Length: 447
Image (tube, rainbow, N blue to C red; front, side, top):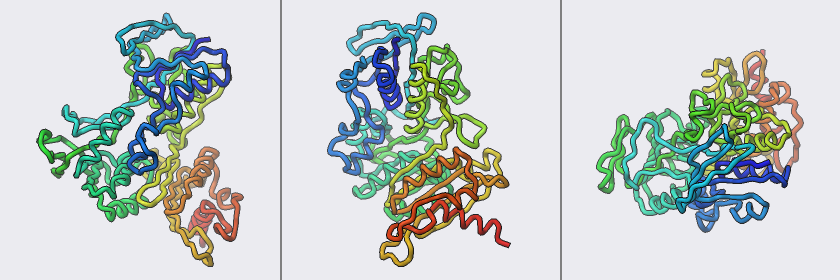
């Protein structure tokens, strides 16, 4: 069998490596339009935080390593057309040479692109985005040179970039159209704490503001014009609104209303010989009636594993996503899973919640660290449907337990009595999750 994979980012690589490990006899051709692979799109933030010496270090494999495993990889090769009837892929090399290759199975891992909704970007290198190694390298130089920087988008990329730049002597503006930052992942109780930390670090927040235009872009500084303000800046980073890259197949595969490729639970498209994964598909969200476009790497890798298994002939289904995320910004670890309270209301779910500040250790220990935690429950059934945690202590692994609890529809009573470890020098007899659930239970049932 011969499998062609279009796209050699996280999903394409995971699919290729999984297929090769399952059946080394399968021929795999991996086609990538860039001249490199496995660059992590947040590499610029890793470099600014001095966690690596060079931006080019933010990779986890190489073309040579793939070739040593028997995977054929074509770099700087653009797929120009797909013929599903003939099962052929047409492509063009950087030399201009054109060729056609046949397949038994095709995997689409073309990913997503960043763009700015309802905003035309001028042809100016002072306003850009970063995702690939080349664009990140260019952005890194601009960020180092600029004295005043505006970041458009208050999601993870925007907030993490603010954190990476906060101590570099620059004027930083964060522009977000919503009334809170990270609004897709945390509710106001946590976002307000983070916003205060950001402002104390010198970040100028512009919430409820939408960028409408850029003026005087040939001058320094130029102006970012928002709904109610004019912000002077020397460089602008667009960190909003990823969209699926489906132009190769939009004429012959079924698409969803949000532009993603429609797939079944096996990541199989409307053509049974073509699979799609990663940022070109939508995912079933637990406790949601819809499939959503959620461009997170953990979803990409999971969907790639499912696609690979089914291509080889081992049935596997994608279950649901809880959009579990984590970050470390402004001295705090922030993690989230499941629906926020605001999302639950939008989904029409009647919910109850609790927000607490809990000491992690017993009071006799010298080291005392607090944890902010919010749990969201469905009213009546008392199923856990969402969880958010924030602390200066690294509590990130707790969110994985909450994600599993949501997927398995664990109830309030089960959370209170769940078996977590205790050590008198490390924590309290009840784990953080059980403590929060216990306090919610007391409030709920107190006479």
